[in-house]
Image (cartoon, rainbow, N blue to C red):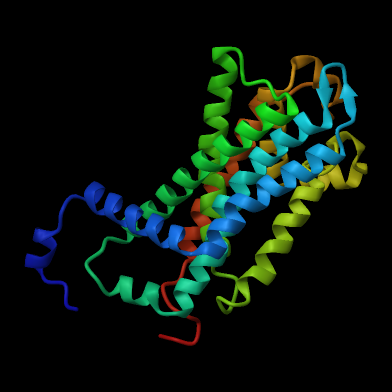
Length: 274
């Protein structure tokens, strides 16, 4: 399809096109039962299993179940943002979807806005489900001050941007769509084990703590603990505090890194095509 000046002039505003693209992304996501079940059910199943089996007391007023809920909310960002996009985009590249979209008048920004919208809607639904189970079964306490709600908000926003951008950036690594899950899933699993999701972070070996501190999931987990656990729990943190200022700086740095990598590496067609 040839894009003429008349075609460009007839295009609706970018916001309307992005909203329409977001609707398409959501419809495709809902119709893909495997992605839908894995994105939503897998974290819930992990929460129910780990929260029920390892319900030990970690500190006064804090059980491992409550600790684990905070980690799973941070992991939800990885599932809906990084993992979902890092697998889905290579499949779209392999089946020619990206190449066809690149040849239409659709603004490229609208495609990426659609992905962000998909992650945002999925994230809201997943966090709501995790909190519902956490409150109902594991005595998780919702934030009780405006400051904690504000912290929760900017953590979700920065986490959304970080995981979405890194998912798009990582999507250029798999050579085929079918091979993407084999590359992406182990990365997510390793980060969860080393970032204080499945095990208390303070019990990890020092070298593992140093390694995980290079990646955003560790800081997302730490930030979420500051929201859902009492401040008295800070004595269990490596630095003796929540370090929210450092959490924000690290996440902003990863947003910048992800944006640069996306801009320089994203491909609309397979490597063997020109």
